[in-house]
Length: 242
Image: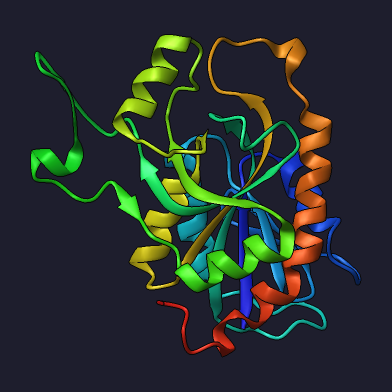
């Protein structure tokens, strides 16, 4: 069984692949490229939920193609991974977050009474829940905090917007742009999903001078190095839903 990891951009993809040993293979997909090391296929699918969903769907439809010494095998797990912004002091710059909920925070409608999520409109869903035991094991292996990660199509740039998101989603630890799209594609293929984020900045007023992208990328590499045995062996457990 194989693990598919989907990032937004190549620098995140490369941070993940550096965590794995062995030679790297590159496999072409429609509009993208898989970077394969061992049991892991890593794909830079593009920024935002739509690009992430499309890239994930193409990769899942490919069925983990065989190439070189690697045999074809179905994907057992999809992981949305990359850097992101954090809401709380519990998750400082350079720290790690594993999502126990992947939430579409701005999918819905604005009304005179405020924002309504897509579920309140009677459509679809706005949250995916990764296997709880897997979340616990990855968090324990990496030292990550576990909590909801919000997917947004527009990165937050003000204290007012950050406050509104937290009011709507109490306990949220971070925001990023791809998790829900990856989860939507994985769910349609009946493959479990996980989201791992390394904190590069605080959610709120944009201050690029305060961002620590290099530190976050290094933390992402370290996280996947520590989590690799858990991710490869996760489907041997019988209690992942508990």
